[in-house]
Length: 393
View 1 (cartoon, one colour):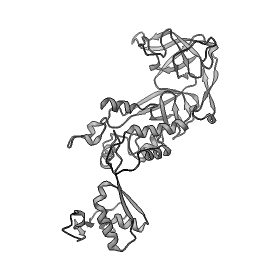
View 2 (cartoon, one colour):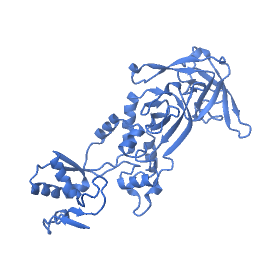
View 3 (cartoon, rainbow, N blue to C red):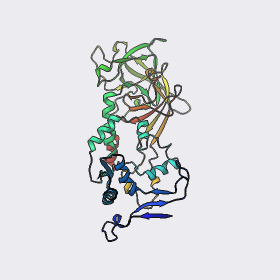
View 4 (cartoon, rainbow, N blue to C red):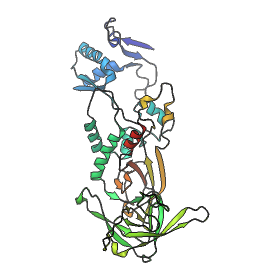
C-alpha cells in the first residue's frame, strides 16, 4: 500500500507529530462508492477536518486520543479552518461487561450471542431490547459523571437507575414462572370472582385493574416447601398464607406423581371471610404470595437475562488467554411455560411492567408475537449483583 505522510518535526517528543499518516492508497471495492476512489483519508486527518466543516464546537474523545490532540490542532491551523476544541475523558468501563467493539463483533460472529441487539450486549439496540429506558440511562450518566480517571463502574449502578425509573412508572402484574397447581377444595365449582389489583403503588393516579380468581390457581414452585426450613414462611402443609389481593389459604395436602415423587398439585382450603387478605378475627399471616387463575392464564416465554461475563473486570483476563472462556454460562435462562395474568394478553412489543415479587420485564421487540408472547427480564427487584460482587471480593 502507498501512503501520504505529513513531514512535521522528526525530533518532536510526541511521535504523532513527526510524520503522521494522512492518506493511503487501497485498491479495494468500497461498500458505498464502489471503485470510484482508491485513496482514503486516515482518522487523524479526517477527525479535525470533518469537525470543522460540520461546525462542531467540542470534539469529545476518550483518553487514548490525548496524544493526538497536538496533531488535531496542527492540521486545523495548517488548513486555516475554524478550530473546534478536542477534550478527552475516561471511557466507561462496566463490571461483567465487554466494551471492545472488536470483541463484541467476535461474540456476534461466533454466535455466542444472538446478534448486536442481543439484550445482554452493551449496545443501544441491546439495552433497548432489554427494556432499559432513556430516562434511566440519563440518570445513570448523571450519577457517574465525567472523569479523567480510568476506573470501573459496577453494573449494579446502572441496574439501580433502571429499577428506580421503572419502580415509579411500570405497572404491576402477576406472573408465575415455574407453575405449581393449587386446587381450592372448598371453593365453589365454576365460580369466578374479579379482584381489584393496584396498577402501581408508587402512583395512586395509575388506578387499578381486575384479576380473575377461580378454584384452580398457579403459584410459584419456590413458594411451597413440603418440609420447610426455619426461616421459610411461605406455603407448607398445614400453613396459612395470603394470596395477593385475594384470600387466606391453608395447604391441606400435597399430591405427588407416584412414579417420580414430584409434587404436581396442592389441595388447599380458602377462608371466604378474608377477601382482600385480612382476617376478621385479626389473625396474622407472615407471607403473601402471588398467583394466577389457571383458567384465565396466558402462556408466555420468559427470558431471564443476567450479566454476560462471569469475571467482574474483563481487563483482568490474562493476556493470550481465551476471553470467551469467561462468558457466563447462566447469562440466559429461557422459561417456556410461564403463566401470566389475563391483563397481559394483549401486551405490545416494548411494553414494560413489573411482575410482582419477580422483577421488571419488557415485551421483546423482535421475537414476541400476539400468539406467542416473549418477555425479557430487564432487572431483578433487588441488587443481587452487588451481593455477588461483595461475596467474590
